[in-house]
Image 1 (cartoon, rainbow, N blue to C red):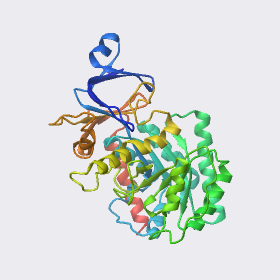
Image 2 (tube, rainbow, N blue to C red):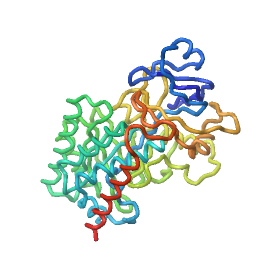
Image 3 (spheres, rainbow, N blue to C red):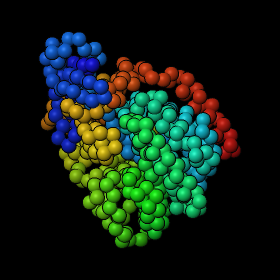
Image 4 (cartoon, one colour):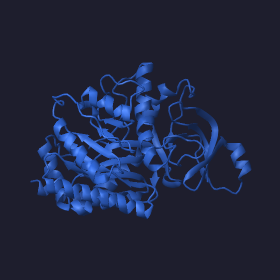
Length: 402
């Protein structure tokens, strides 16, 4: 299949902008990037996905989400205890429709890969399969794991780890390229974090990435003095805005990724491994912090956070080249309706990324070479049915919460 004609933003740390271009997709990967005329002439038998001059970008990566919490919108939950009550109220059906509705919202904003951290105590042994079934139905990439929390009993933490390991083993056996398992932890103190990390690494043998939620209340309140055990897989540290500087430095040195929900992390530079995550909020890339005209450094930091750092972490799981459009990279592509009034090139890209592109409408989505959304219409699911079923589930969950 050939995608074009379009203006291609190649992504990665040093992005280029290619005019009047096209992408040839073979299987699940990008085979060629070239002028659309040359591509069409060389492969006249190929099906064309008409881009009509839109901007083509690599799919976005949401580095920290709670997909099953999508049914909470309107409840205005704030306290940890309220979220725990919500999680316990979920049935397997609720998890499935919540995750599917959340992933649809993400796809409509160009998100093709999501790193999900899950908890649902009433259906622990079924919940992760519901999340991955939702991702399979829509056709997007999801990495997920069940979080063992610091306040859980020993038995509950063991059950959480078994669920994560079971899912990961099953996905590897099935060779599900768009899905992978993680092992999750949720820590409220640095002392608790140390114990949770040891338990998780012992259980997994260091063979799975960690998805760590730093649920510190008002900061860690104590210095980070523990070294992180070596693992071949990079970890994802969520809510890095609460992490002490020494922990941030240690994670960065390991090549881990850090996700922060606020628009900016104090002291972050364009070189930091800071990605973005939606948490339980809207499944869409963040706007640039309310800054209408960001400085050059702020624009660079925003670009790396939204376009580069999450994709670099996810590429270790789903394929090298994720987050870029080049031969050999996964064909995770997003078409945006954006017709700039000034030149869009390598020199102006960061300014466009923090203004017009950050607000542009997504018209098409492809994941692993398969079209998920075409000209604004989802082709793999009935969006109206999903919304209706999700609302039914939400009413039942809300009723349980009184």
